[in-house]
Amino acid sequence: MPKYDLFIDGERHVPTSGAYYVSDDPYLCRPWAQIAQGNAADVEKAVAAAHRAFTSGRWPELTATQRGHLMWKVADLISANADRLAEIERRDNGKLASEVTVQVRYLADYFRYYAGLADKLQSHVLPTDKKGVFSYTKYQPKGVIGIITPWNSPLALTSWKLAPALAAGCTAVVKPSQFTSASMIELAELFTQAGFPPGVVNVVTGFGREVGEPLVEHPDIAHIGFTGGDLAGRKVYELAARGLKTVTLELGGKSPNIVFDDADLDQAVKGVVSGIFAASGQTCQAGSRLLVQRTIHDDFVQRLVEFISTAKMGDPALPDTQIGPIATRPQFEKILEYIEIARSEGARCVAGGNVRADLGGGQFIEPTIFTDVDNRMRIAQEEVFGPVLAVIPFTDEADAVRIGNDVQFGLAAGVWTKSLHRAMYMTDRLCAGTVWVNNYRATSFTSPFGGFKKSGIGRESGTEAIMEYLETKCVWISTDLDVPNPFIRR
Ligand code: NAD
Image 1 (cartoon, rainbow, N blue to C red):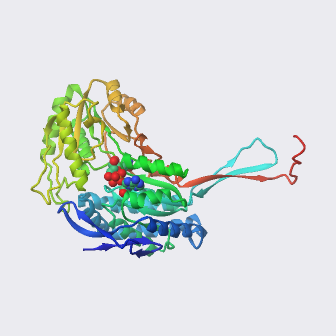
Image 2 (cartoon, helix red, strand yellow; image 1 turned 60 degrees about the vertical axis):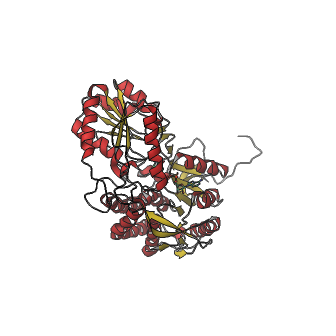
Image 3 (cartoon, rainbow, N blue to C red; image 1 turned 30 degrees about the vertical axis):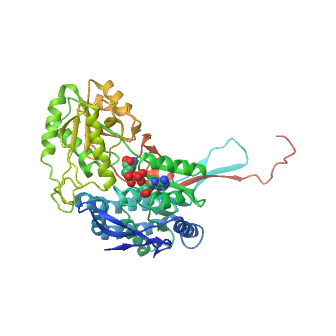
């Protein structure tokens, strides 16, 4: 069984505790790797290494262009190692090989995008109302960044933070999810191979309380980039606030996927299915509420049920598998609990709802559809993070907007219509960080991603993301040789 140490100051390190825990393969439900159990002492070492690398040695001396060159090298190494990294992630979280391989290969382009952006940020010469001064802004890296990520897309969600942070000139300590840490240790080694100075990228594996909290609280951490659930997100926000640290929080969602009666229903069915059942619903942007116009409700639900009845569940390593296992045991149990909650609330299960104990180690839940859902029910308001779709009828555009926005979250939304007017009406009014029209799930390094309301704070990807890792400094230079006498009023 592979054994993964911590990664601090450019090298693997045995954890201070000497302890390792096992990471399970969710398909077989058997341990497949041992992971170092870090603690506050390890966080201390990692932050010290990152702080040293930020303030001394080669890293702060590099120009933005030179940082970009290093990032290009790491991108090439990611490309060369993508299939191996994807295989590790599949073992850790059970994601389909066909999906995770594409996702990891794509990460190289994240690093290339920010490598290119590193030397293209332009600050401003400021117009001023004062005579005898010249004033401009300049951007400066914030410092050491703490990165905390969940288990569903470990390397992708880390890269969304790490690539802009490095392009900005920051250094980082990463705490991956305790369920999916192995790929991050492997990725960290690629930074050393690419020629990054030791300490620029560090990884401390372990649990939220033992590693995550000391990382957020550490006085030398300048900013926290967090993706995860709203409970842990709130805790991170509170701890960061005590140290007056800035945060980027990417939290949960309960996104509406809205189908109008004029939509191309064959296309909409595919969009709704991929929105909720891709990655077995374990994605933050899952379109977990299907809002469907009353006039087509029964027909559309029947099309959905027929479509998913053909989905092949099973071994995520096989290229023709379409639905894989649930990534962790606690998540598996949580989803089953929500299926029971939906039933007890009076929702009608028209597809799925059962465990497939005959597959792998048994951690499979069928794609599940509930109709007769009222938007006030818990199944419509709370994030399940699994393959469970709540179907809610609506009458017209205004009703769709009202129901669509009637949740605490605001991460994403989908709209299916052939009418440009409807599309514009909906995109203007939906409270969501991303709105897809006649598609669902597209994301890119070029496009800002993040949430309204309780779905988070700040944006990742696109040019906006790099600003999360920069401070703006305003410089005033006197062009007048005479400093005014402070005792003479002007
Ligand atoms: P989680 O919140 O349980 O854990 C996320 C990370 O936070 C893990 O590394 C965990 O160890 C750490 N953590 C937990 N408690 C902590 C604490 N007190 N202090 C510091 N760190 C702590 O989330 P999860 O179960 O791993 O992932 C699922 C959640 O992530 C879902 O709610 C999902 O919506 C969200 N998510 C959001 C996005 C997005 O971009 N908005 C993307 C993927 C996942």
